[in-house]
Length: 94
View 1 (cartoon, helix red, strand yellow):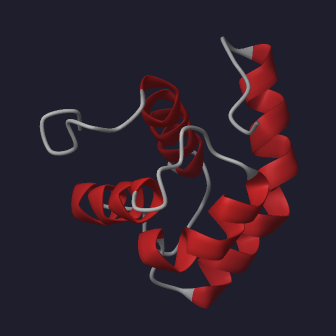
View 2 (tube, rainbow, N blue to C red):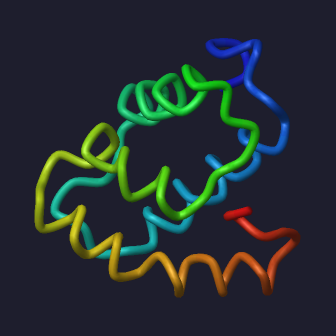
């Protein structure tokens, strides 16, 4: 992803990759594609985001996911996604 978005902050990139990995474990109608992931990252770096927060994720999921049902599922799963990330290497949301 760095090749497509050379100015993305390391912390944001790490969080984005972690979120996408978590989303791919969910039973979604359509998993986010590489193209959608890049679009989502671009939308987050436009306002110069350095890290993710839950509100940013909620506000921009329509870029990443195609179906309202998937968006609602992910929003409901955000606390779990965050908790699973805490068990890993770092928190997803600031």
